[in-house]
Length: 193
Image (cartoon, one colour):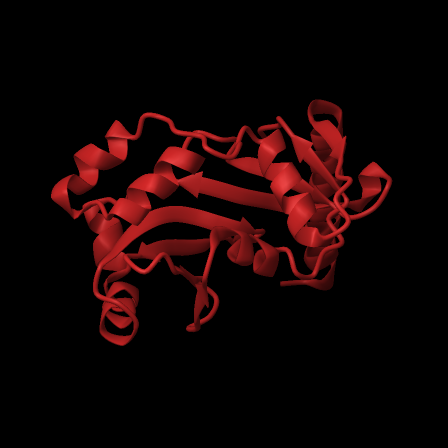
């Protein structure tokens, strides 16, 4: 590749990113988070996405997919969190220029192909940590992790760019870890590009 082609690719990428951020800031509803701790701000952001304590929605999609293998803890989790806004923008500063990448909270099931693709990860979780697990979806900042919940209530997150299985005692602990490198003082809701 010539140097000119390389710089041309860089310029095209910068323009694409610039347009992405302009369109994103125009379409989204930006909400100031007022919590004094990161966990309080995360809970506030999740409320902006449609979550509330005691939430209980229809999860027949998961009941049909898992059948008798749906763990009671997974059932409770899906009832509380399924159907909320799946994507929001993480904003560290007071200005739209401080918009970081998307945060994903997409609850879904695995297809038969996905189960084959994640066979090693599933085997590692089952053999090393706990045997009874259900896949709950993709959760995370920028490169979201694939997340399973165990009968114990622990969450197991695996990112495609590393071999480590991260273990969390609660969804809030997982969300805090995913956002650990961000101040996260505002959230952008309601855009799709």
